[in-house]
Amino acid sequence: GGGAGETADAVAVEHYLTVELGGRGVATLACTPADLEELAAGFLVGQGLVPVGETPEAVGYSCRLSPDRRVAGVTAGASGAPPGEPGTADGCWDKFIGSGCGAGLVHDQDRLLLEIPPVTWEGALPAGRLTELAAVLQTSPLFRLTGGTHSALAATVAPGGAAGPSAGPPAGPPPGPAGLIVHREDIGRRNAVDKVVGHLWLKGRLGGGSGPFILVTSGRLSSDIVLKAARAGFPVAVSHGAPTVMAVEMARRLGLTLVGFARGRRMNVYTGGERVSE
Image 1: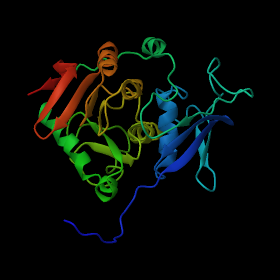
Image 2: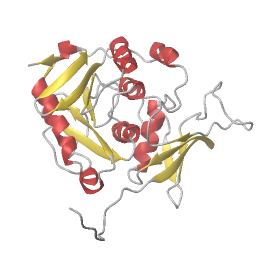
Image 3: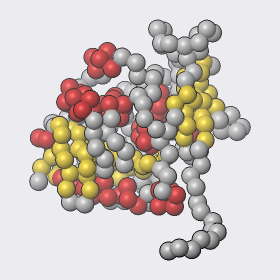
Image 4: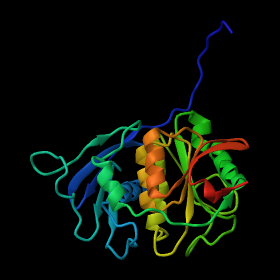
């Protein structure tokens, strides 16, 4: 209004976490410095470096954060970077991954589409269930405070549906509708999804007959998000934002229901429309 003044403003923190697997650097992630154990686990699950269908106990998984919380040292059975990946002369394939766009460590998506089994869930859920869950993201506390984060959540396909062992209350504020399991925020949209996936995997709730779950995210539905969702076994992925052409093609090939622009009482269903009822 023509005036100027000084005030205090809340700003999101940008942190850097290096994920090491079996003593070898995998990636350095630009992230929000909360739920870092979940972020490391979800990132490794999303890259296929730990088996999604096994529990952490079954693969001897452990994660130790350095005192400054900038390194997550992970061990998991015969862990280590897969052969053939680009890396440095000493064999370490550490890579910086910012909070913005990109597919992380995905180099051959056609090969991954053959390795990831298609989602085969044959159920259906009302559209109102998806819009209800999408509305939860609007209450994300860190975003409301700073305006600088993305958020993601996982929920059962039906309110009050079976959510696996030791369900307990939803992980992370704020409280949401029945069936909400975990709600996470981060400066990066992929990180928010990884934290949700990591939470489920660390609780032993991916694979093994647990689920299925709905993934809801505030970010754009790009190919890397679809790959993360498919690898984790989500039959439905929902976003406030838009998908890309590659994301739609991958979702169709992998059997995902892909929903974009879930705002208010409307949405666009791009693939798997048979799973969404009026």
